[in-house]
Image (cartoon, rainbow, N blue to C red; front, side, top):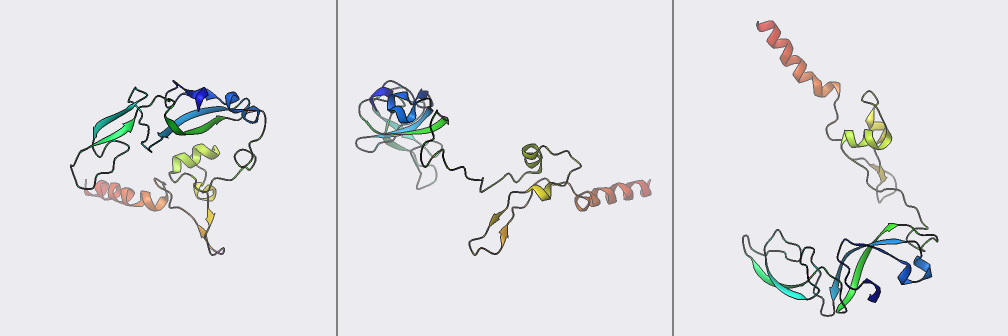
Amino acid sequence: VSPFYDQRMAAVVPGDSLGEYYAGCLFKITGGRDKQGFPMMQGVLTNQRVRLLLNKNHKCYRERRKGIRKRKSIRGCVVSSEINVLMMALVKKGDKEIEGLTDDPRPRSLGPKRATKIRKMFGLSKEDDVRKFVVKRMKKNGKNWLCPKIQRLVTDRRLAPKAKHIKNDNQNK
C-alpha cells in the first residue's frame, strides 16, 4: 500500500508501482479498511479515524430503527500507513493481460430494460422493433430463457386507449 500513501479515494493511480505485471494499468481507489476493520468514507478529508454521527443516508451505517442516528468510527478518505486493505477498480487495461481479470471476456448477464437505452446500445431507430434486441439469459434449469419486461415500450396496444379517447372527444363535439 505504500506507493498509494496520501492518495484520496476516487483518485486514479498508475499500477506500475505494484510490479511489472500491472505496468500500464490505471486503477481507481474505491475504498479500504484499516487494521481494526473500520471502513474508509468518501468526503472525510483526513488519514485518521474519526467518530461521526451517521444516519440512514450515510455509507458505513445501516439504521436498525427509523430515525435513529448513531456515532460510529470511520476512517478518512486519505490512504495512510494504517490502511490494511485497499480496494481498487481497473480503469485502463495495461500492456499485458491480467489473469482472471482481463483475459476472459464475459458477455453482459443483464442488459438495459428501458426501450430508449436498448435503442442507444444497438443503434436502432424509433421504427425498429426493440423486442428482438433484448439481452436474454438462460434459467438455471438450462431450458428456458429469462427475458426482462421492456419499460416505456410504445406499441399499438399502448397507443389504443389514447386514440380511443381522442376519437370519443371528436364525436362529442
